[in-house]
Amino acid sequence: MTTPTILITGGTGKFGRCFVEYFCRKGWQVIFTSTSGERAKGLEVEMGQGASGLVCDLMQHESGIRLVEELQHRQISVNHLVNNARSLAFLQMDEAGVTQREHFLSEYLMDVVVPYELSIALWQAQPKALETITNISSQYGVVAANPELYDDYYRQSAIQYGVAKAGLNHLTKELAVRLAPDGIRVNAIAYGGVEGRVDDGFRTRYGRLVPMGRMLKETELTGPLDFLVSEQSSAMTGQVVQPDGGWTLW
Image 1 (cartoon, rainbow, N blue to C red):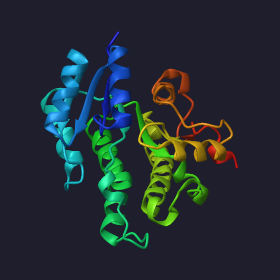
Image 2 (cartoon, rainbow, N blue to C red):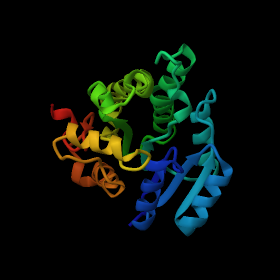
Image 3 (cartoon, rainbow, N blue to C red):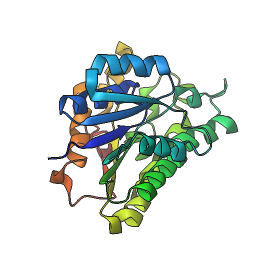
């Protein structure tokens, strides 16, 4: 049986590390990208022989094409693509809570254009090998942010984030239709808020606003992705799966 190969962009971030570690434990060949050679090497060492990092700035023009060319040079065929890369630097706002054009465009480029370019480049280069594409989205791509969650809503909730994730959700549907003739399934995961970089006040407010009464745990991140890349979801394409504790229900 051939060992599956998965490419995870943004592999050294919060979500990415969880994904990389999980699929390494499954015995898959894991390729991940990072903008930092130091962080990439550190994760490689941590994961042992199971993971290989590629230093890549996906914001650069034709970065997706160059990444695919590097994979071909290494004779690596990707079966599953996870578009997970992001940058907190693009979530900036001014003192009035207004997003400047450069940050709006950068967030949209990272969340929508980059996944599109990389997905198309992989599809064109190896249509028979590619099986699934999974886009990592957010509950805020489905519903608007709730002002009750924030101490200072206008300056803490970046409008460009949700708008870009909504675009990513629709990109998922468009790609699902276009790639279906080649048997490639495209889905998205709109995660809820995850415990970690928040204080107790934020965590308490979040719990009051979601049916399950809590944020997601890091251990709950990999299950939906594992399902979407497996044969158990072979009839699913163009869907936005919402593991959000019920946030989008009300």
